[in-house]
Length: 479
Image 1 (cartoon, rainbow, N blue to C red):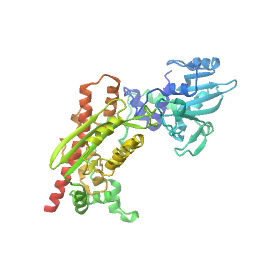
Image 2: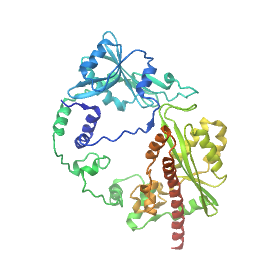
Image 3: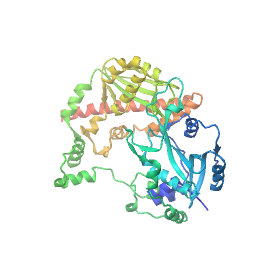
Image 4: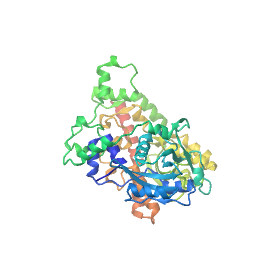
């Protein structure tokens, strides 16, 4: 009989229609936000200093896995099944009368948010007559700083306790998992019934996820959403002010005024002050691309540190637009810093979109890793300006923004023809995926140009936004 994996059970628990769709759809290739230089399985082997162990294989049934447990002290990647649910266990340590379970986590602490998954695996194991006495989780040690060579033992930690990121102890993993009182039988029975359906009709009102699910358009192909002129909550706030005590945010006020006047909202005084401060003879626009690593690949890096590999820089100097760029390979950090410090003008504001949530953070990390550049890096950090603030803080609001303030959304308002859709790479994670491929193969000129074009588009878009803001201000002054 067909068996399900935990991902199927999770999909069913989230939305039965999602589960039904998953069974009939080709699974997309998995892309991890975090790049790993070795598998967590291999890291666990090194962390536990295992020299002898049995390895489960794809297609093994529970009886074969139990045979491995019977004859070996350590068993890795064993498969077990109960009531139609199939699970894979990273590692089992077999003692004379019991079993210790080891999980791996792509996290800096054993998260209690994973309790349902761990509890489900334990439920299956215990229903295969395995007596579990302890559950351990291997996770990244956030305090480890890589030296010249990688120390896996120091890079990872083991714990039998759930911990908050702060280190606060939330309790024993096995004890808390058993309190979940897992029982999957009824869910599996309903999943089997759903699997047999040729059609699965769903009303929009029954959809538990709104438009967040990747199957939304498949479920409701006729659904056409009207542009969001104003949120229902904000409109209710206007119509029923007695229900609300907190003052309107500047962004909400801008959206409400735009809706009521049917005109773009502009805080002319705030915009004028902003331009007075930043519309100088030299204005720079910069955008970084970076990759995130779980295991630190280079000296001075920690777990989940990022590696900036690319930047684009547009410069308006006395009305003339110039462009410079960088795209490196391998340990790009020093070359990235030196190139950026050489390319950035010595004066004038440096604009980035979400500057203090992205580019400035990257620069502070580089300053820590390369203290010889700290003073020069800090000198340009102090010149950064977040272009997004104009829109997030309600200085400018156009109904075409539809309550969204991403750079791509603002560009749609300014010039719909200036689209990322014509580029070979159209979003940041796609750029990272292409970069990883380029890292694994010989340099590909076409791929390099695709990466350069994408990053170049980001800074060019910021230039167009800046020019648009200037035009708006002139129009308001002349009105």
